[in-house]
Each structure stands twice: as C-alpha cells, then as structure tokens.
Image 1 (spheres, rainbow, N blue to C red):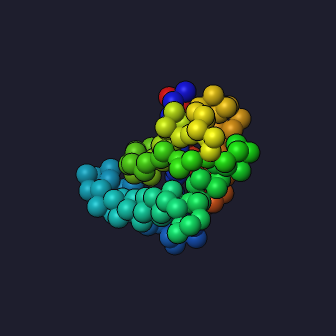
Image 2: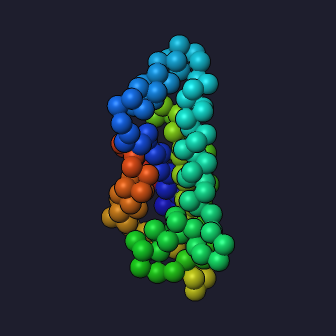
Length: 138
C-alpha cells in the first residue's frame, strides 16, 4: 500500500443546514454544481488547514496519525483534492505512506495496517463530524 484516500462526507448538521446540502445535490443533478463547489470549498479549506502545522505545533492530522501509530512522524505527505461520492462533491484527503517517514527516517508504510487505516478513518469522522467516510487503499 502506498496511499490511503479518505473521502469525507458532509458533516452532521441541523436539519435546516442539511437542506442546503440536499439542495446542492439537486442542483448538481440538474447540471449546476455552484452550490456544491461553495460547500466543498469551505470543507476542503478546513481540512487543508488541519493538515498544516500550527506555528511550532504539529498539525492536527499529524497529531492524529502519531496517536494512532504510536510513533512520531516527520511531516505527513498529504494532499486535499476533490472527489465525487454519492452525488456529492467532497474533500478527498490522500495520505502518501511511502512519502511519510517516521521521525527516525524509516518509512512508515510497513507499519500501516487495515486496523490503523480504520482507526484513522474513525478519528477523522469524529473530528469533522462526518456523516460518512469512504476509504480507498492503493
């Protein structure tokens, strides 16, 4: 395995806000994805912010990964791109495990297990209050 992609679905929100997400799906089905892109932009910027260090502190993503791996990491090789799932434009957080090294310089990919991938998925779902996450391992 070299990469794990986490496609993060919409957040759990009050019903009136959920109506905006439903409207975005309807508009997209009719060929207008402007509202879907606006919602995506907000969520992807939040996710991108979480992947970056905060001053001298490690970024939220790096702290989550270190907790799940039980080992310190050098900066995480991750990117946020767009993806479509269930008719929704969603942020796709892709982590390159071959590009992410342990603090001692060793590759992280040999220690990544399916169980760790699921634990990371659960943590991301909790942090971002996602209704669902689709995970793809490559």
